[in-house]
Figure 1 (cartoon, rainbow, N blue to C red):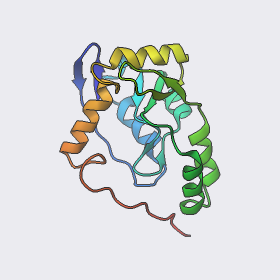
Figure 2: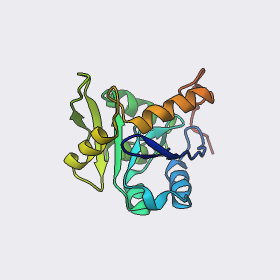
Figure 3: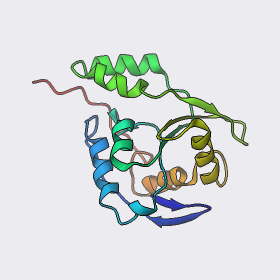
Figure 4: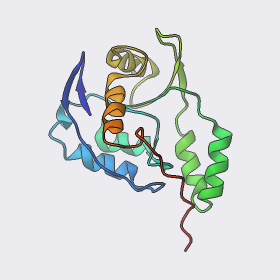
Length: 174
């Protein structure tokens, strides 16, 4: 979703990724890199770094490719021990590389007016700038409006926040 503050949707973009794959970063780069909206994009706000199960976004590569600040927002603190265990179990060959993506950028706590702090990470901007981006794009509640709208659209289309989620798939064996 391409969003202009204070509350104007410029456009909606869509792509797909492989469940538990490794193509999320490239798909986002291709989607935004060829978008007519890219010139107006000042920052990219993501709902965490995992899409399609454990298809993890490389925030550094995304920043390098787009040259725009990348801000992730998470409503709860991740359960890092459980994530690491799952990566080792389902992706034994590339668990270390995936784990590096999970731990590449520290999350910081961002208080909200609703009392439930967010967990935020930033690449290409300072923590203060990331906090300002989150606050500037949050209209109601504590979730930035682009993420809130994206969740509503996904639910309507039966996407990840819609009805049933597929079970995680084990890593393919060669």
